[in-house]
Every structure is written in structure tokens, then in C-alpha cells.
Amino acid sequence: MANFDDYFKTNHSRFESELCEWLRMASVSTDPQYKPQVEQAARWLATKFEGLSFKTELIETCGHPIVYAESPQVPGLPTVLVYGHYDVQPPDPLDEWITPPFEPTIREGKIFARGATDDKGQMITHLYGTEAWVKATGKLPINLKFLIEGEEECGRKGLGEFLAGKYDQPNRKALELIDADIVVISDSSQYAPGMPAVTYGLRGIAYFELRLSGPKQDLHSGAFGGAVSNPANALTQMLSALIDLHGKIQLDGFYDDIVELSETEREQFADLKFDDEAFMKGLGVTGLTGEEGYTTLERRWARPTFDINGLWGGYQGEGAKTVLPAKAGAKFSLRLVPNQDPKKVYESLQRKLNAICPPGITMDLIDLHGAPGSMVPIDSPYMTAAAKAIEKGFGKAPVFIRSGGSIPVVNSFAEKLGIGTLLLGWGQDDDNPHSPNEKFLLKDFHAGIRTSAQLWEEISKIELA
Ligand code: BES
Ligand code: ZN
Image (cartoon, rainbow, N blue to C red):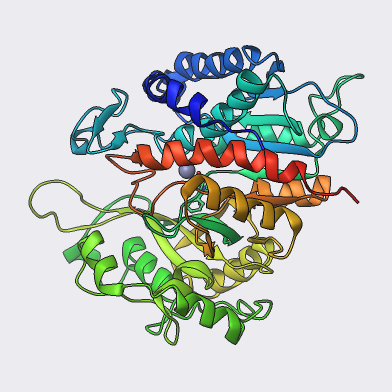
């Protein structure tokens, strides 16, 4: 067994200073004004892989480039595909950051920056775990391929086209290029500080925009209110008809395909002894709600939900204006559990909203994106390898959890390559991804690096079928 303790000790502070350099690049994918920084991040990463003598390519797409790199492939060794993303969410609201989002700052053992946990900080742990093998032993015990995209946070169009073969060349077909025995993704969370986890289930999503139009222009609410349908009123009525007061989603057939949680799984969740009080305190809320009959963990990990993500209509300025707005709209999404089909949800939603749309209002329902949830088998040799590696890297055996977030590409790998994914998140639930003061515990960063190096070793011991 290779021992990397010395290598990790010697390179401890370099890993941190390079992490700062990496997070300083504002690789915000959704906003064109950041394009140069997105490209700079892609090139920085490619240079790192070249430094390991990996065959490296920046694959140009309709959007931001994909960074692809592979170790020299040795026949007969297991092949791991590491997926991650180098793009980040927009940093606003800027005035809520204690230190600026692209000036990485270390406070109390945590690094604060946009992308610290999601996913730049987590993703490069695999670069350094791999580097340890290459630099300290001159070899790798497995074949490695890295597929790091730059559009995870803005729709994955480029990656979608890449996986569909759009950028194939006669001697380079996407699915052959990235074919592997297992995928590894570190883009989620541990159960809690000091409680590392392997995630075996993710929720899916169905995301929509609803636009309502009424009269041809804004009206005086005294002169017309009560006789003319108000799009903002209609919007609240229509949205509230989608979920009842017991947290049940009111769409025909919505629950039909759901595989109910087994008693065993409910017991496993309960064994994690989730602390509702501490959860509420951490979030600054005084109560919790959700689907009746389910615990907080069940609601967050394994039950579908409905959330309004944005809402507009009517007067938003100072003071009062008695207006009946001509238009109103909302963005909302449903988190789905495995086996629910986002297409069916869209069809059912369209029927329901059409049926309850009041007279005088025209509606436009836009299906923005959707992806089913995913479950990965717990009893695979790869899971066992991951659990052993985590125990060595974090000094603690992992717990097995599900997660409420979505990583749609997991389904693409299963469908297109027929392979499973190890979801090994090093983050914490309170790392603030997508929100101000995003952070990553440096302890978790280094443990992630150690685990990555261990994981390659553990996977090398698996007998290939
Ligand atoms: N890293 C997250 C996914 C995640 C979050 C997994 C929390 C597990 C726990 C990822 O970058 C993300 O934000 N995904 C989006 C996907 C969506 C836009 C299709 C999400 O979950 O909202
Ligand atoms: Zn994200």
C-alpha cells in the first residue's frame, strides 16, 4: 500500500495556496461578462493535468469548453471517470458577503469564496489525490479519466451535446472516450461535520416558468377590480392549488410511480438521529413544515416537493399604488424522487393549470428543464471501496445517505454508458452553495485529497468481471 503521508505533509500549504488561486478565477458560467474568467479557469485546470502528463484536451462546445484529461491507459486496469464542474453560480447579492466572493479568504479553518464547495474546491481534491500517486510513486494503480464541465450551473447544454455525439471526430467519439467502469463525483455533502457519507440517492427536478396575462395594460384597481381577473391574484390561486396544507402535491397521478420508503430505510434515516432543533437554529427559522407523516430527513431526501423560486407582478416600488397589473409570473420547481418522470409531471401540470386558469387570463407554461432522480446500488464492490477509502481519508467510516439536490448527469452516465456513480461529497450542509459566504472546511479539503488517493488504491483491488 502506497503511503502518501509525507507527500501530503510537504504539499499541504501549496494545495491551499493553489486552491486560493483556483477560486480567484470568477468562472460564472451563466453571465457572458465572465467569459474570459471561465476560459481562464478551463485553461488553468488543463495545465494542471498536463503537469501530470495526462493526455489533455479543451473540448470546445456551443457553450463553455469541457476539460478532458486521461492518464496513460493501461489495459486490464479498472477505469474511473471523475466528473465535476469548474463553473460557479453568480455571486450576488454581493453586499451579503463578509469578504468578496472572488477574493478567497481563510477564517477559522474555512475557505470562503464562490465555488469553494460547489464544485471547484471539491473537484480538485481528485486532482491532488491523483497527483500524489503520479509524483510520489511515478504510476497510478488504475486508469483515470477526468471530465470537468463548465456549464453545470447553467443548463449543461455543451455537455449534453457532447454526450449526444455532436462533437465526435472520426478518431474521437465521446462515449468511447469517457467509457469507464465507474464514475466518481464529489459535488454533494457529508452528513455532518465529522460524519462523512456516501450518497446513494439524489432527487430529480422539474422546473417551470408560468406567465399570466390579463388586460392589455395595467388598470386602476378601484375602477376595475372585482370585475376583471387580476393576473397576480390568478397566479397566487393557481400556484396554491398545486399543493395542499398537508404538503401533498395536487397533480393527477403525481404519486403513482413513487416507490415508497421501506421501513428499513426509514429506520436507517432515523438512526442518523437528525436534530430538528439544531437544524432550525442553523437556518434561523422557528418552525418546520412539509409533507405530513414524514420526518425532516425523509422530506429533504426522499419525498417530492414544490417550491416557488421567484415571483413577480404588480407594483414593487416605495409606498402604495392601487393597480391591477396586466401581467404576473413565477418560476417554480418540483423536486422529484426516483421513478417519477419529469415529462409526465409537465403534462399533468399543464392540464391542471389550464383547467383552473380564470376567465380573462391567458397562460403560458414554459418547461425550463427536468431530470429524473437517481439511486445507485449500495452493495457494489465500488461502494465498499469508497467506504474503505473514506474511513482511511477521514478517519471515520461513512454513513449512507440520500440527498435532496440533483445531479442530472448521473442518469446520462447510467443510460449512455451503463455505468454507476459513486457520489462522494466532502461538503457540509451549511457550506452555503449558491448563496452568500460560500465556504469549504480546509479539514474536509485535505481529507478529500487523502480519500481520493486511497480510493484509487481500493478500486485497483476490485476484480473486474
Ligand atoms: N452540487 C449541486 C447538487 C447537489 C446539491 C447535490 C446538494 C447534493 C446536495 C449542483 O451543483 C446543483 O446545484 N445542481 C442543481 C441541478 C439543477 C439545476 C438541475 C440543483 O440541484 O438545483
Ligand atoms: Zn450548484
